[in-house]
Image 1 (cartoon, rainbow, N blue to C red):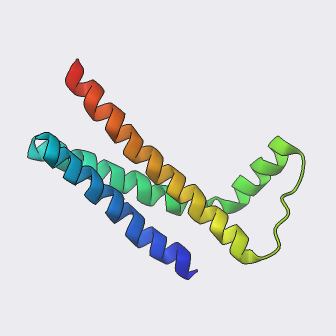
Image 2: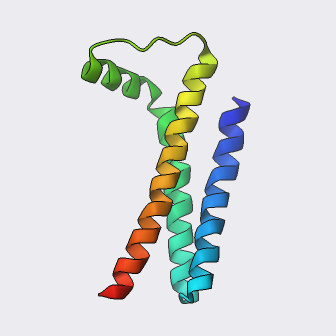
Length: 107
């Protein structure tokens, strides 16, 4: 449970800080900086909580899609899967900021 707790606290703050620093470097207004960094933090935090809360449903979806049960040798591997899924959501939210903030300024 410690890796999930650490990831849940550190990764959203790190992602939001990264977004805020990039928005500051690019000269976005204070409101836009706070909006983007807050949105990334919320999405990242939700990614970890959602992966943890819907672990059973995700497992059933995986079995339905692949037709085979995953081979897991320990509960730590399942926990690692939840952390990796949360990290993926966090990375996707930072990528969405990168694309969304640049497309929004181009139009």
